[in-house]
Every structure is written in C-alpha cells, then in structure tokens.
Length: 453
Image 1 (cartoon, helix red, strand yellow):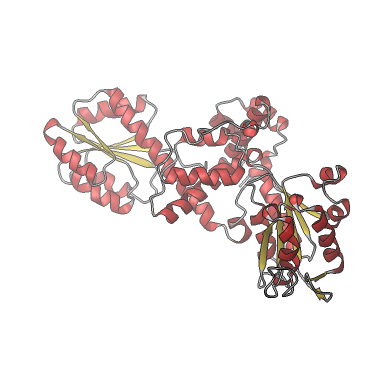
Image 2 (image 1 turned 30 degrees about the horizontal axis):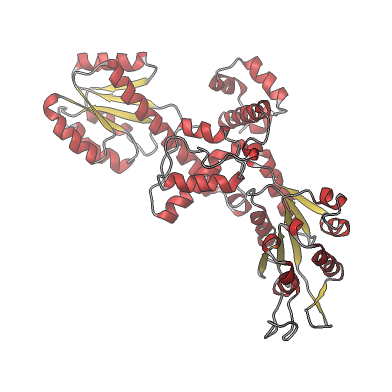
C-alpha cells in the first residue's frame, strides 16, 4: 500500500482540565495531538487531504462542533469527526452522525474507550489517504502503464518488451498461467503497433472443434461442404493488416497445425473449396499456458510450428511472484467494479490487504478481479480470500518456505518504495535492525538505490 503521512488528532475542548486529561490519554496511547480551546482556532488547519482526525466537543463557545461538521465535510468529507457529548446532547450527536460524523463518545468516558475510537478513526483516515495516493498513481499513468498495471520489476520488463516488439512485424508467443493477462498483452502489442487502425482478431483454439478449425482460420467457399451455403471469410483474412491472436494454441489439433505452419511460412491461405491462394499481411500472436517446447519433445505439438512462432517470446509472471503489485491492481479493479455496479468503492483494511498479499492466487489477476467485484458488491466478510468448494491441488503451488520468502520480499520492496530507498526509514517501518534489512536485501537481490526518489 502507498504511504500516507502520520495521522494526527485535532482535539477541541473548551474546558481546560478536560482538554489536558484527554490530550494526555491520547498522547500516552501514541497519538500526536494538537489541542485547541475553540473550533475557531483549529478551523484554519482543515484542508483537503489533511492527515488528521477531529475530536471535538459538541457544545463550545462560539462555533459548536455540530455547526462545524458541515464545514469540515464540505472541505473533505472523509475526515473522521468524533463528537464528544454530555448526556443531555446524545440526540444531537446521533443526528450529527446521520449527517456524516464518524462517531461520538459520551462524557464521562474512559481512556480505553477514547483511545479505541480514535484508533479506529485514525486507521480509517490512513486508509483513505493511502487509497487516494494509489488512485492518483493510477490516474497519472497513461499509455501501456494504464493497461499493463504494476510497479514490479517483472511488469516493467514486460512493458519494455511489448513496446520493443510492437515496433516490429515479428510474430510473438506469449507464455503465462491462466488468468495472467495474455490477451491483454496481445492487445497491447496491437494497440502500440502501426497495425492498430486495423482489426485485432482473437480466436480461442481450445474451444474450437477440429471440424470447424480450418473454416474458422482460412474461411470457405459456398458449397465447400454440406452446410456451407455461402462463402465465409476466415480469421486470417479478417485480420489482414492487423493482428491475429491465437489463444491456447497448445490445444490446436495436429492436422490444423500443419496447415497453420504452411500459412505462416507462405503468408497466404486457401479457403476450403478453393485452389486460389489469398495473401495476407497480419501479425500472428500466439499464447499458451503450457511449455510448447516440452510438448513438441513429447510429439504433442509440432516442433516446426514451435520454432516458427517461438522466436519472440514474452513470459508473464504469475501474481504470486509479483505480490508488490497486488495493492495497486486491487484498487484498480475495485474502482472499476464500483463504477460498473454504481456502488461506492469500499475501503480495504490493512488486515485484508495483508491477507491479499499472502494468498497464493492460483487464478492470478483474473481471480483478483473476481474478488474485487465481490468485495464491492458486499458479498464477502472480513476475509476476502476464503476458499469455496473443493480445494484444488494447485491452491498452494509452492512450499511454505518459498511462499513466505515471496511475501517477505514483497513487503520489503513496498516499504523501500514508500520511503524512497531510505534504508534507515525502511528498517524502522519494518521494525527490524538496519543490519537485518541489509541481510534481507542481499538475500532477495534487491538494490535499494533503484527506489531512491
């Protein structure tokens, strides 16, 4: 999660003794407190994005806490305002909560109750500001960064490779587990190439019956077979000048692979029922979740076709190997879901974020998007990644030590990024000695200088 500045408490209480005791209780609990005798004195501090919460008495000389609340909410409606009320003013405080106050506390109150309410309000404010930073990051990204989202070294490499290959006419093979975004990468190759004004034509080879595969790829003439009542243009012709995306190419029937190889070599096709060669000019992007070289060694995929399409290769990392991208991706998907379902985007707590960061994500980015949709719709409880139905063998694809190391590395990288590569600040934030941090940087091959702002 992006870093927000430390959250302070603005305390407004006209009674000097109560103000002093309340300030002391909050300070002893670790809060930074700015105390004031009136709302008028604290008023100039209220700004949009203020890293603070307000704890204010309902009854004050001059501007009251209740009257000040609408003004605060107009400047920044997400600043938590906790109202302090006497017994006779509870109805007033309840009405204020309906109008946007975060909570209220009744006099006399214990220090424990005050601290508990303040702690929840501070956490909420911190989450709000952190999410604003993430949203600003997303808003300021453009081009390929706004599509292939991620700050990890792996995703930076993927973006560089895509942009470099987009400038060429080379056919491309994309490797990646299910849900890693192979079609998204293929579309980026198309959108950032000179072919972007022509068609991007996707075809899922896994859902293609062998009897229809030739017709889908190459088209057919009228009368070529019983149900061919009229001529049909195939995917190659439809993608002429653009990009043809062959997803799950590992599942393409072997007889069709032979004809695909010939088409790629000659850059022309023949419709079924025709002897006329039809030239085409399109980039072919293939995608596979299986190792085609291994399949070719097992004679399950043609080796000559593998070597024909396996020249320029892009490998997409699974989400579990780039955990530092999870906060940004989850916030992106949450905002998209909130817009789509016309709901307010909910806040994800630090505990929920830690859960997201520690989960194995067998379904990768697609699964993360599904969780964000359910989160926005209010279909999940405090736990976001509860496994429903039978647990599959791939739920935890690696041993526990490897998963712990990946999670630990992601946390170290995120803290380095928060603190601009400052190792002392990073070690303090992590609660470890600086030498321990040095040891972890060496262990995980992390260069702290890369994060200096």
